[in-house]
View 1: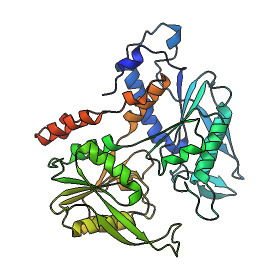
View 2: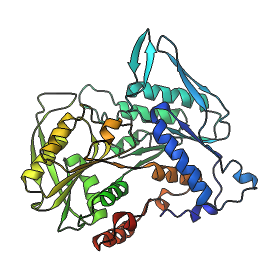
View 3: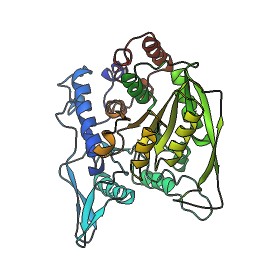
View 4: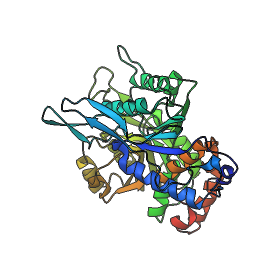
Amino acid sequence: MPDFQKLDTTIPVAPLKLVVMDSARELGDSINKDLIDIRKHKHHMPKDEITFKGYLQEDYRLKFSTDRFDSGEAKATLLESARGQDIYLITDVMNHSISYQMYGFTNYKSPDDHYQDMKRVIGAIAGIAKRINIIMPFMYESRQHKRSGREYLDCAVMIRELKDMGIANFITFDAHDPRVANSAPLGGFDSFLASYQFLKALLYNIDDLIVDKEHLTVISPDEGALDRAVYFANVLGADTGMFYKRRDYSRIVGGSNPIVAHEFLGSDIAGKDVIIIDDMISSGGSMIDTARQLKHMKAKRVFICATFGLFTNGMEKFDKAYADGDFDRIITTNLTWQPDEIKQKPYFLEADMCEFLATIIDFINHDQSIANVLLPTEKIHEFIAKYNAGVSGREAIPEI
């Protein structure tokens, strides 16, 4: 559990406010509820001291609007004062469900639209708030993190632009390439992993896993995700393997070079449970190919874990792959919006990140180290040992 006692002896930077963009409404509302619960029941702050004014609130969300003209132009308006507040702006640039009217037509917001709306709100708050912190779970243009030929470095420019607008801290999850933070080296930048939440989702829902090196292997679907897989395997105490993607660099299909073959590097997985872990599922073709190859290699079960489940080409190929026995479960987080159709799939599990994010916000508001939030690997190994000994996942694994 996080060490909340660290907060009982420190003063917050300023009264806390959440700015929840319409793209992150569901996520932000849940974070707000968890933050209220944490501060009511897990802190022991003096209620009447001036330094803790506004510490306990019935609602931490700041009221504002982002309106559109018929031409498609937009503006942001604060509906209450943000002066002196410690602002945490939460946005989901991958939410494709939000629409607006332009010249009589219905347009759906793209990542570019969400990013521009966020900047408008920042512009309305900048110079008034005590501090502005951005929570952008899926980092805008994160796949455009390096320059190839005559390309533009959107992601690096975004981080630099937000720094120039006065952002103090940038918080994201499982950044496609965290080195992009080097574009603004003097700014606060944190990229968190969902490893513990994946572990919870697995052990809460799968009763007969044996979590050790003899029975479980964590697989990286490509060389770029190897560090992520090695870390998760270390947390679990499991074995590690990876696939090497051979690509056709003479062609570009869907914005990238097509994969022509997957080659496995690792020990024998016959009879073992396998976890494939990556930062995102986009169209999912590559992930399904990897899972299918693992089943051909006699893997017992295949669990797919991805921080962001985008499913850009729909769910038909996943339905077919599940029916064919190519994988057993897909686990993604609730950090990006997903339609109910996905959540109702029999193979889908959701890793809830809201309480974890609320705790991160709570600690940053006190200027305390996030290391106090993260559970040490040794503690997780204790929980896993209880699970392997027959204790149910919900009893062995704490909520945070």
